[in-house]
Length: 276
Length: 276
Image (cartoon, rainbow over all chains, first blue to last red; front, side):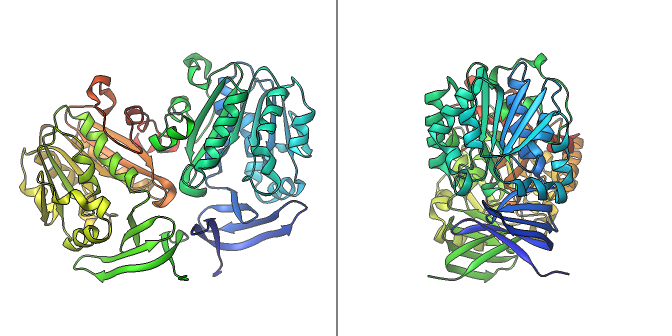
């Protein structure tokens, strides 16, 4: 048995560590350091620049919670854009909504797509679906060129260091507002409140200046720092807290439920304080 | 700077690791291996048998969520028992409720109390409060000897190995029912749904056979396995989901809110499935 352990330093002084069966692929791409490994606890895992991106065992939480909250909030999401998300997990969840006619994925790093298809097939399998348009391109530039086009935009980025740094700026949120239709809605992963409180506070402030409806919700992701992840919604018209019960339709999920759709916005006090 | 790191294996193949400034105390007590250390990330921490019990930085989540959910559910909790909890954190939160006339703490290991007072004073400080009766005794035996005595019982135990093994048995829950008054309510920490699903399922089944109202709720505790912790309530009369808004009174908290009191019971689907 291998004696390898992979340790992710989530802060300077704290991390998670996991036993590795074997490494599957390691490569410095044009944008980041990509590692795939088979772990004992979490199945196959993707790491970028030493940070956990997704694992076969817990990926459903992140992907369901990114996709279903905005998609059930919008009454008719026909045209969807995913920025980042090259592993394909968000796309898989998006396609569970029959109203979605087209889902465009723009990831800057084609290697993430390539090796996710190879080693995370249950996650990436729907990238070849005919409703999906996969583009290897700069998400920031794609947004800058788009106007009045999308019903829902999902930002499934890495941390605000490296290639995703400009995806956490007010300029990017303004670009998203322009790229969305007049009743559009966007969601972005916005890290965790234990180690990145300042980031969350800044994002709320920036998004509030651009979108009339700004909301923060959370989900439990055991392989992400602190186990509590946040997502920020900016919406031009529809409020995720005002979705009527009859608007939900049945989809197969392991984490998301229509009751959780609303409960996920009820924040612990120290997190709520970051939104005020 | 010290090169020490403390690694807790939360499963055979996964753990957390944290940088240590210095160890404060290490001792094999009559019941367990006790360690206190000053960490860079979490402040002072207490470990028992190699498992994180509490840290100065995130202790508020566990202690608030154990105490306030049952105490706000019971209309007049005058007499409260805490089984375990020698660090004193639950007692500190219990005393925020002015209706509580007496809070008894029964911990089997006096060393936990002694070293918590020394190294975790913000947590243990209220153990000397005049409303508190601290006993170094076997919680299981204390429960077995009690009858129709308590309004609320809180089980703040270690994992179901070592000294706390008998605190996860149906016999113990039956003893709790006997020790409670006719409208009493109890809560127990019941581990996490990612690595201990079977335990949670068993506890729900056992408690349901004894208490007419059984409920499971969660909280995010970053230093505990998976970051998502569960708590099980057994209640003879009062339902935590039916607390009326005017029953809540203001208390100072960092995690608990009256909105979260109810939202914490809205479970992710894979957790909800464990209760059915």
